[in-house]
Amino acid sequence: MGRIILRVVIGLVLLFVVANLALVFAGVGTVAGVYAYFAQDLPDPEKIEIDQETFETTKIYDRTGEHLLFEVFDPRPNRGDRTYTKFEEIPLTVREAVIALEDKTFYENPGVNFEGLGRAVFNNLRGLQVQGGSSITVQLVKNVLIPQEERYKVEYSRKIKEAILALEITRRYPAGPAKTRSSNGI
Image (cartoon, rainbow, N blue to C red; front, top):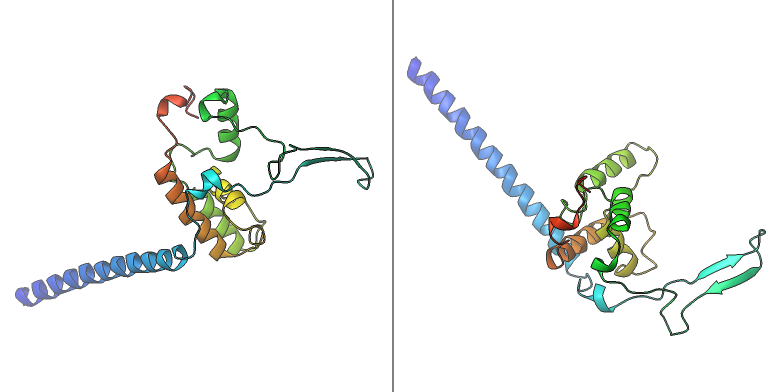
Protein backbone atom coordinates (compact mmCIF):
# COMPACT_ATOMS: atom_id res chain seq x y z
CA MET A 1 0.00 0.00 0.00
CA GLY A 2 2.87 2.37 0.85
CA ARG A 3 4.46 1.85 -2.59
CA ILE A 4 1.22 2.70 -4.34
CA ILE A 5 0.89 5.94 -2.39
CA LEU A 6 4.54 6.77 -3.12
CA ARG A 7 3.99 6.15 -6.85
CA VAL A 8 0.86 8.30 -6.84
CA VAL A 9 2.68 11.14 -5.05
CA ILE A 10 5.66 10.92 -7.42
CA GLY A 11 3.27 10.83 -10.39
CA LEU A 12 1.39 13.88 -9.12
CA VAL A 13 4.66 15.78 -8.53
CA LEU A 14 5.87 14.91 -12.04
CA LEU A 15 2.51 15.89 -13.50
CA PHE A 16 2.69 19.21 -11.62
CA VAL A 17 6.25 19.88 -12.86
CA VAL A 18 5.39 18.97 -16.47
CA ALA A 19 2.22 21.11 -16.38
CA ASN A 20 4.16 24.09 -15.04
CA LEU A 21 6.88 23.67 -17.67
CA ALA A 22 4.20 23.50 -20.36
CA LEU A 23 2.67 26.73 -19.04
CA VAL A 24 6.06 28.45 -18.99
CA PHE A 25 6.85 27.36 -22.55
CA ALA A 26 3.37 28.41 -23.71
CA GLY A 27 3.82 31.81 -22.06
CA VAL A 28 7.26 32.34 -23.57
CA GLY A 29 5.96 31.22 -26.96
CA THR A 30 3.01 33.60 -26.71
CA VAL A 31 5.21 36.55 -25.77
CA ALA A 32 7.67 35.72 -28.57
CA GLY A 33 4.82 35.41 -31.06
CA VAL A 34 3.25 38.72 -30.04
CA TYR A 35 6.67 40.39 -30.19
CA ALA A 36 7.40 38.96 -33.66
CA TYR A 37 3.95 39.92 -34.96
CA PHE A 38 4.14 43.54 -33.85
CA ALA A 39 7.89 44.06 -34.38
CA GLN A 40 7.77 43.27 -38.09
CA ASP A 41 6.22 46.62 -39.08
CA LEU A 42 7.87 48.92 -36.57
CA PRO A 43 10.15 51.81 -37.54
CA ASP A 44 13.86 51.56 -36.85
CA PRO A 45 14.48 52.76 -33.26
CA GLU A 46 17.57 54.65 -34.47
CA LYS A 47 15.22 57.00 -36.33
CA ILE A 48 14.73 58.64 -32.94
CA GLU A 49 17.99 60.50 -33.59
CA ILE A 50 17.30 61.68 -37.13
CA ASP A 51 13.59 61.56 -37.87
CA GLN A 52 11.94 64.41 -36.01
CA GLU A 53 8.41 65.10 -37.19
CA THR A 54 7.11 68.59 -37.61
CA PHE A 55 6.16 69.89 -34.20
CA GLU A 56 3.52 72.50 -33.57
CA THR A 57 4.62 76.01 -32.78
CA THR A 58 3.52 77.86 -29.65
CA LYS A 59 0.41 79.89 -30.37
CA ILE A 60 -0.87 82.64 -28.10
CA TYR A 61 -4.54 83.59 -28.47
CA ASP A 62 -6.67 86.32 -26.97
CA ARG A 63 -8.94 85.51 -24.03
CA THR A 64 -11.73 84.34 -26.36
CA GLY A 65 -9.42 81.81 -27.96
CA GLU A 66 -10.47 82.97 -31.41
CA HIS A 67 -7.80 85.49 -32.42
CA LEU A 68 -4.15 84.53 -32.76
CA LEU A 69 -2.01 87.21 -31.11
CA PHE A 70 1.47 85.74 -31.53
CA GLU A 71 3.15 82.59 -32.77
CA VAL A 72 6.62 81.52 -31.63
CA PHE A 73 8.55 79.49 -34.17
CA ASP A 74 11.93 78.75 -35.65
CA PRO A 75 12.02 80.10 -39.23
CA ARG A 76 13.87 77.01 -40.48
CA PRO A 77 11.53 74.48 -42.12
CA ASN A 78 10.12 71.76 -39.86
CA ARG A 79 12.02 72.90 -36.77
CA GLY A 80 9.53 74.70 -34.57
CA ASP A 81 10.93 76.67 -31.65
CA ARG A 82 13.39 74.35 -29.98
CA THR A 83 17.00 74.08 -28.94
CA TYR A 84 18.65 70.68 -28.87
CA THR A 85 20.64 70.19 -25.68
CA LYS A 86 22.96 67.43 -24.54
CA PHE A 87 21.74 65.48 -21.53
CA GLU A 88 24.70 66.66 -19.43
CA GLU A 89 23.87 70.31 -20.19
CA ILE A 90 20.40 70.05 -18.64
CA PRO A 91 20.61 71.07 -14.96
CA LEU A 92 20.34 68.11 -12.59
CA THR A 93 17.38 69.70 -10.78
CA VAL A 94 15.44 69.93 -14.06
CA ARG A 95 16.19 66.27 -14.87
CA GLU A 96 15.17 65.21 -11.35
CA ALA A 97 11.93 67.21 -11.55
CA VAL A 98 10.93 65.67 -14.87
CA ILE A 99 11.76 62.17 -13.65
CA ALA A 100 9.91 62.71 -10.36
CA LEU A 101 6.79 63.89 -12.18
CA GLU A 102 6.78 61.64 -15.22
CA ASP A 103 8.60 58.39 -14.44
CA LYS A 104 9.91 57.72 -10.93
CA THR A 105 11.37 54.40 -12.10
CA PHE A 106 13.24 55.89 -15.08
CA TYR A 107 16.67 54.66 -13.98
CA GLU A 108 15.39 51.22 -12.98
CA ASN A 109 12.86 50.31 -15.69
CA PRO A 110 13.85 48.79 -19.04
CA GLY A 111 12.04 51.52 -20.98
CA VAL A 112 8.57 50.41 -19.89
CA ASN A 113 7.07 50.98 -16.47
CA PHE A 114 5.36 47.59 -16.21
CA GLU A 115 3.79 48.38 -12.82
CA GLY A 116 2.22 51.60 -14.07
CA LEU A 117 1.17 49.98 -17.33
CA GLY A 118 -0.40 47.05 -15.49
CA ARG A 119 -2.26 49.40 -13.14
CA ALA A 120 -3.56 51.43 -16.10
CA VAL A 121 -4.74 48.31 -17.98
CA PHE A 122 -6.37 46.88 -14.84
CA ASN A 123 -8.23 50.14 -14.16
CA ASN A 124 -9.21 50.42 -17.83
CA LEU A 125 -10.67 46.90 -17.81
CA ARG A 126 -12.63 47.75 -14.64
CA GLY A 127 -14.06 50.84 -16.37
CA LEU A 128 -12.33 53.28 -14.05
CA GLN A 129 -10.83 56.61 -15.09
CA VAL A 130 -8.11 56.30 -17.72
CA GLN A 131 -4.68 56.63 -16.14
CA GLY A 132 -1.24 57.15 -17.54
CA GLY A 133 1.18 54.28 -17.28
CA SER A 134 3.76 55.41 -19.79
CA SER A 135 7.42 55.80 -19.03
CA ILE A 136 9.41 58.75 -20.36
CA THR A 137 10.81 56.45 -23.06
CA VAL A 138 7.33 55.33 -24.13
CA GLN A 139 6.24 58.98 -24.33
CA LEU A 140 9.25 59.74 -26.53
CA VAL A 141 8.40 56.81 -28.81
CA LYS A 142 4.76 57.89 -29.03
CA ASN A 143 5.60 61.50 -29.89
CA VAL A 144 8.43 60.86 -32.35
CA LEU A 145 8.17 57.39 -33.91
CA ILE A 146 4.45 56.59 -33.89
CA PRO A 147 2.60 58.20 -36.82
CA GLN A 148 0.51 61.18 -35.75
CA GLU A 149 -2.77 59.60 -36.88
CA GLU A 150 -2.17 56.62 -34.52
CA ARG A 151 -0.96 58.49 -31.41
CA TYR A 152 -4.26 59.09 -29.72
CA LYS A 153 -6.16 55.99 -30.74
CA VAL A 154 -7.07 53.88 -27.75
CA GLU A 155 -5.67 50.55 -28.94
CA TYR A 156 -3.73 47.89 -27.12
CA SER A 157 -1.85 47.13 -30.36
CA ARG A 158 -0.37 50.67 -30.32
CA LYS A 159 0.68 50.24 -26.69
CA ILE A 160 2.41 46.96 -27.56
CA LYS A 161 4.28 48.65 -30.42
CA GLU A 162 5.31 51.52 -28.14
CA ALA A 163 6.55 49.06 -25.50
CA ILE A 164 8.64 47.09 -28.00
CA LEU A 165 10.24 50.27 -29.35
CA ALA A 166 10.84 51.63 -25.83
CA LEU A 167 12.55 48.40 -24.77
CA GLU A 168 14.78 48.52 -27.84
CA ILE A 169 15.64 52.21 -27.40
CA THR A 170 16.57 51.65 -23.75
CA ARG A 171 18.76 48.73 -24.77
CA ARG A 172 20.54 50.83 -27.41
CA TYR A 173 20.70 54.07 -25.40
CA PRO A 174 21.05 53.34 -21.68
CA ALA A 175 20.12 56.10 -19.22
CA GLY A 176 23.68 56.48 -18.10
CA PRO A 177 25.54 55.87 -14.88
CA ALA A 178 23.84 56.12 -11.52
CA LYS A 179 26.10 59.07 -10.67
CA THR A 180 23.74 61.35 -12.60
CA ARG A 181 21.16 60.75 -9.87
CA SER A 182 21.07 62.85 -6.74
CA SER A 183 21.44 61.56 -3.22
CA ASN A 184 17.67 61.44 -2.73
CA GLY A 185 17.35 58.48 -5.09
CA ILE A 186 15.79 60.20 -8.07
